[in-house]
Length: 320
Image (cartoon, rainbow, N blue to C red; front, side, top):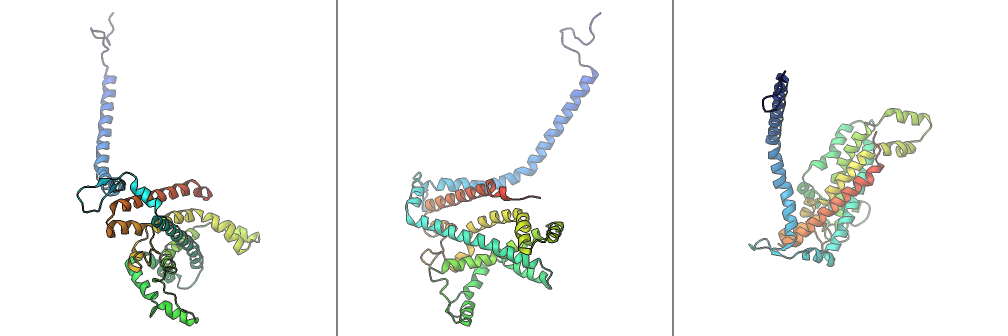
């Protein structure tokens, strides 16, 4: 008796079950292809925009850093790593890096400490605290140009608010923006004033989500306010602190608008941080190569700082 599943040439004859399984498989493949096509249709425009406006400028900037170009000539001259060598063998760029580090440490450290202190005060049950919270956060949403103009008046040595306050205590107001010793501290005060509200609001949100039972247990054990703050509040706020450290460091490297309005990087380069140096070289001196090289260095520093924070600082973070 012959096998009914074998055709005359030895090939198996498909059964009804095989046909049904193949049909189901084809249907699944078709559905998967349609899902992929739909996914690409929705995602491709976003990837295209991100590629054109985010990644392509980075790649093109890296190429410009290897050229000599005045932003007018039709041809860019390839010079290899000469721009980087010039940056690190000259005193100007090293001074800019030092100024940037001083500015970053002062603004980031001050913003975190003052923001936490303000958040602890705003977390108390005080009358009108909603209005105070709004006033504290308001500077963060104001434009840098408006803030710069307002503080130009405050720091004016002849008729500004600073002179009035110093005269109240019998002192003379320094020439904030024209004295190279005071210009950078003045800019740091403005950025501190702008950042403290943001840090305070973020810290306040963290404080209000801390578990009350831990505080009640610590109080029953006789722990004082400072010990509770040091042993419970600060560790539990470490995720918030980590987030603020990352974001404020990045924003401090991008500081530009207030400097542009108040000092133009002066006097004598006293307020020239890395972001202003890139702008000055590129759009005032028309030296695209050094400007692009400075931007690449800034990108590398930010990347290294972020990786170090993620690798080492995050270990100190206590997630509940």
